[in-house]
Length: 147
Image (tube, rainbow, N blue to C red; front, side):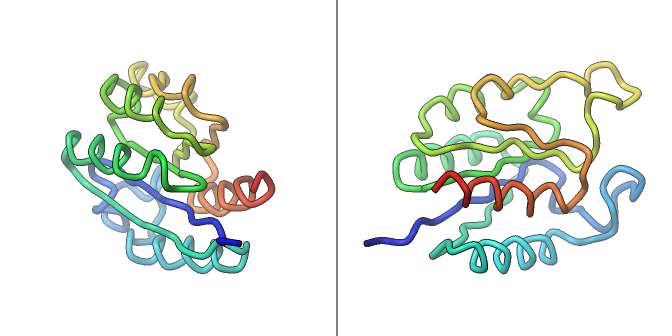
């Protein structure tokens, strides 16, 4: 029997983790996050962990489409696209596996009103917000429990 695999997709500006405002985004870099999540996924029984980051919306849509029928679980933090990308929303509708939306900051309590809304939540199975990098690890555990 094939062991499941998980994908972790990070959107715009998340390649700048470690440099962005630590009040919202912490001090861990994207490379460190990828390593932490990969180790957590392996420990949770996943055969593989695909980590992907892009600053290009079309590239994110293409990656979701590429993985939509082959991945066993998906974790996505679209960054600012969370608030307006119906293209990513529509691509996520195609994902056959459970999808967890993750945000480092608590988007519901951000000062900018536009940051409080997610246009992808309704096509995700779970949203984890405001737990920093622990949110990604919680997402791995949640997916592992369902698989």
